[in-house]
Length: 504
Image 1 (cartoon, rainbow, N blue to C red):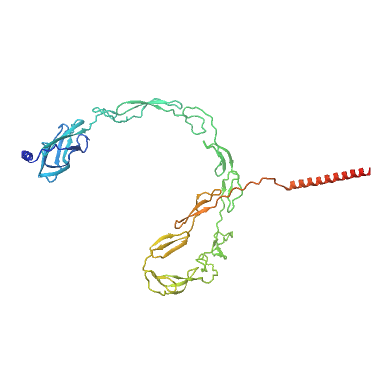
Image 2 (spheres, one colour):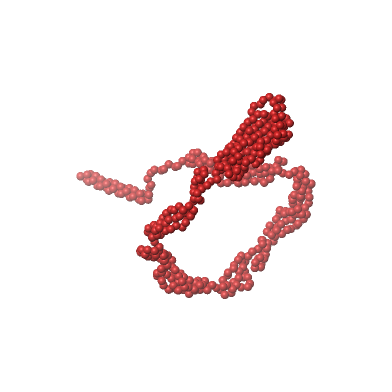
C-alpha cells in the first residue's frame, strides 16, 4: 500500500508541474436501495459526468456500528493501475495519459450488521481526480426490527410503527340464552392476548315443522294456519286426491273412475283425474316380405291390420335411370337427351346426356394454331383450350352505369354482367312538389346509382255539397206531383167562378 501511495504522490507532483489547476470535479452517489434490513447488502455507486482524467483515488467512511465494507472495485478500463483496499476503505487508479471517463466509476458493497440500530445512516465518499477532490454522501435507512408485545399488538415498541392485527377469538361463553323472540349474549376471549368482547345472540324465531304446523317446537306458541291444496290431482294405482303443498295433507280422496277399455292405440284412463289405468295394447305391425308398389311409391303392408307403416316414394339416380334404388320398381324412360354443346376435358370432347351424363361421339381434340402471346391454342372442333396464351391476364375491376366486368391491361374482358341493384336506401324523403332521392348499390361490385323518387301530389280539395239519395228523389217527386194537383184544383175553381159571373 505504501508503494501505491508513493506512486500517487509522484503522480500528483508531476501533475502539478505539467498541468494548470482545474476546477473541482463533480460526482454523485446512488444506491441499489435506500432502505434495507439488517443482514442485507447495499451497493453504492460513485458516478461522474464525462471528463478526462489521468489519475484519481477515493476514500469511503461510514458508521462501523451499522455497516461493514465487504467489497470495492473500480469500474474503469484501460488503466495502468487500479486498486481498492477493503481494510483501508480506499483505493487509487491511474492512466498513462489523459483518458475520458464517465458514469459509474466505483462500486462499493456495504453489508448492514445484524446488530445495527434502526434509522438512517450516512455513507460518505471522498473522490480525488487529477488532484481535485469532491465529497458526496448518501443516506441508507436501516429498517426497524419491529417488536410487539404479542400477535395482537398493533404498535411497534421500538419505532412506534402501526400494523394491522386480528384477534383470534374462541367460541365464547354464553351469558344469556336467546329465545324465539328475545336476543341472548355471549363473551368471547382472544386466545393470543386475552382481550374479551361481548356479542349478541340473535333471537331464534319460532320453529314450525311446515307451513301448516300450528305449534312452535321451541316455546309451544300456537298460530292459525290454512292448508294450501293443489289443483292438480295426486294419484296412485287405485285412487286420486288433492294434496296440501305445505304439509302433504290429503282431501277429496276417491277411487279411480275407469273410462272405456283400452284398445290397440288408446289407453284406459280415469275419467276424473286422467290416471292411466291400463296402457294401450300397442299393436306391433307384421310387415309383408315383398314390396308393394305403384307408379309413385313403394311400401310393406301389415299382415294383421292392412295398415301401411313405411310408405316412401321411388328413388332414381336421374331421368334416365329406369330402376328404383330401394324396391326395384322399373319404369319406362325415354332416350338420352344429348346436348348439342360439346363437353370436353384434356383428353377429348363428346356430347353428353343432360340427364345422366352418358357420353356420345367421344373423339380426341383437333389442335388449332400454336399458342401466341395473346391467343391460346384451341381445339378446332369443340373450342377447348389446349395450350393457354403466353400472356397471363391480370384483371382489375371495372364498371359503368349499366354493368361491371374484369379487364386486363391487354384489353381482354372477363365476367361481364349487368349490375344487380339492391332495393335501395332512401336518402331524401319526397315532399309535396319536391322529389326525393334513393341510392342503390350493386351487390356484386359495389357500384352506386342515385334514383329520383317522384314528388308527392297535393291532397285533392274536398267537394262540399249535398249527397242526393233515392229517398230524397222520391220525396221531391211526390212534392212536385202534389204541387201540380193543387194547381189543377185552383184552376178548376177559378174557371167555375168565371162562368158563374158570366151567366149573371
